[in-house]
Image (cartoon, rainbow, N blue to C red):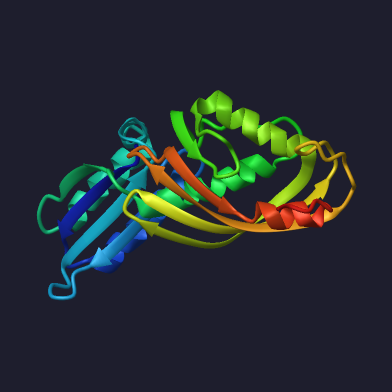
Length: 232
């Protein structure tokens, strides 16, 4: 679960504080585990400064705080502030940008040549997949891997993410798929043809950013037509 720390302070030396933050970044390069950092100044009070620092988890943040450089910078920060800064520790319970990134990561993993990478980076173990081309829904990581391997054995392919829309715990991704038919696909022997297909998937995520459910829509009929199969 992503963790965010908010540092709230009052200072008349905002520029000095900014330079201090830059020095912290430089001194902890290669050691610092923060993934994102923002410094904001209150429009109604120029001495009110807020820093928002994002970490992959609380444990990672605590390891970061134990770095000698972080401790030294903290003491210097206190000296620049008019009063003792306050710290607010937040577990992120919804992050639409993280969910969108996880959806994109899935398309990267599934298209990786060679052995299929582990999918538990993106999906929860009990993932539930709704695919209109399958007679029944797929449950669990093993079923998901079997489905992925079927497509990978039949085609060398890439995905292009065209659009993403996030709303709460759901992300809709519109994609274009381009492939070369190199293996058996639904009884169709390899043709070597270059084919393309468009579609969309809606993924539902839990708090830790892993997908627990997916709903697919894609132009399978158009793909089969390109492979020379007439569908009633």
